[in-house]
Length: 279
Image (cartoon, rainbow, N blue to C red; front, side, top):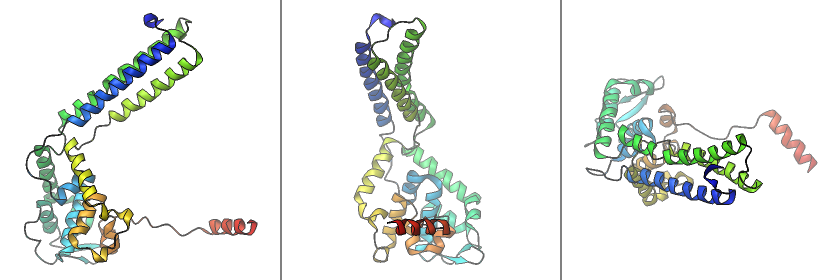
């Protein structure tokens, strides 16, 4: 038997090893990317940290729309009708330049200037430490290796016991070890999925959501009583759906999904009627 340890004691040692390996993985994930340089990100940068390029571009377009610098045109296009707001983010100015002539949203996203602005935005977030570099992400992934190593030890014990017809403990010990190995492998797989944002960026987003909890769409804020800054902040922190409440046509144009419940099919209506009759 592996190391001559009986089943219950091995299971206890295995549990302690899993807890230690999990603590190492979480510590590595929490420590890497804690330090940042420069000031706090703006709304467009926050949107990118929250949901990457698509949301950043939607916030940039909504910034122009709320400043009356952009209007809807024919054939599902948009066009700039005024200068962008003063001190706009580079991505906002790039989107404004892309719609000097009527353009679809797909054409805006494919515009070379918009893509250059996105690359510069990403480079700035990487430089300031809000996004993780490739090396940092590799280090976080390596932090999950101890979990796989502990799981391998548990699997080796089970295999060695089965091949050599030896006792790995009572049924409870065997089942506990099987479950422990499965949970450890799942935990290692989950922790090996490395986020693009660093610990500081995740902490910043959590704090910003706490500070603006009243803008959470789940609380059903009345957007007619809110200003443009609050709407854009809600989009950056919680996603683009608040735009549907104030400008549904524009929201549809920039790809905000409308998840309204679909009307019931005739079969569903008939089924409900039968249930009501039975009741």
